[in-house]
Image (cartoon, rainbow, N blue to C red; front, side, top):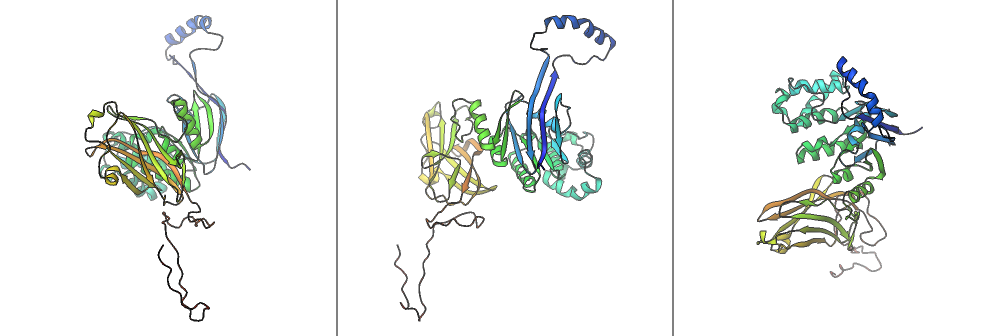
Length: 429
C-alpha cells in the first residue's frame, strides 16, 4: 500500500484572459456575434486568450514529508496550492488527498472584518473544519501563539496585515491537520514571527504530518524542507532534494552562479553582498564535520569606499536548532575595523569546529560606526555532522550535548596490589 498522502496526476489549470463574464443579454449577443471574427484570427496553436497556469503536473507527497515549492512569480505555485486546497477546480488531471487539509494562502482568508479577533478564531476554525469544542480547547494556545491578546475583542478591520496573518496562521497551525499548506503569506509577518512559524511547521512535520510550503526564502526552504519542487511556467523543472532544487533555481535565476550554497546578492545604495559561503579545507561545502576547520566567507562590493572612511565591522552569528550558539565580530577578534575597498572578501576561520550534528544557519551583519548597513538572517544554511573527532575510530554518540570540546583522558593506577604499584600522573603535554 502506497504511503502517499497527496497524489497529483496530469494536473492542468487553464484560465481565460480578458472578458470572461457575459451577465447581460447584450453582452451575450455581442460575444456570440464576434465569435466568427475571433475564429478567423485564432492562430493554429490555440486561442491566445487561453493561459495555462499549470500544465501536466504530476507528483506524490508521502505522509510526514515537508515539500518546498519554489519558482519565480507567475510560475504556478499559488495556483497549485489553490487546487490542492480545493479552492480552484483543475481543468485537467486529478488530485487525491488522504487527510484533513489546513491552508493559509492569503492574508485574512475566512475572516470577517466586522467581527472581533475572538469571533474570527471561532469562525475561521469552523471554516477549516474544527468543532466548537476543539476550538475552545485550543483557544488559549492560538491566542498566545498569535500574540494579539490586547486586541482580541477589537474588530479585525483595524488589524494590521501582520496581525491578520499571525492570527490566521495560529488557527491553521492548531487545527492539527494531516496536511498543512502555507503560501508566501508568512512574508507579511516580522522576522521573529517568521521564525516562530517555521518552528511550528517543523513541529507539525516532526509529528508525522505533511507540510507544503511555498516561499521565496531559499534558506527557509533548505532549513525546513527535505524535498523541493521547482516550477517554471506551470511545469515541474526539478523534483528532488531541497538543496539540489534550490541550487538549480538559483543558477537559473542568475547564470553567473556556480550552484554552491550562496545567497542572492543583497544590495543597499552603497554596498552589495555578493556571496556568503562555508568553506571546509578551502572548498565550498554544505556540511562541516566536527573538529574540521570551518571558514565563513563573505564577498562584497563597495562602489565608493570613500563612503566608509572609518572601516567596516563584520559579524557572523551561528544558530543551531533555532538557538544562537556563537557570535563572531571582526572588531572584537582583530581589535580594529576592516578597511572598506571596492571589492573585497572577509573570512572568519574556526579552527576546530566544536558543534555536534544539527542543522545550522548563519546570520551576517555589516556595520559602519555601529550602524547596520546590511543584516542577512539565515544568509547561509548548512549541516554540522559528527565525525571521528579524536581519531579513535569511534564517532561519539549523537544527541549528547551540542558541542564537542577538545579534551584529554588520563588514568592513574593507585591499586596497591597492581604489579606496577602506584603510578604518578603523566607529565602535561
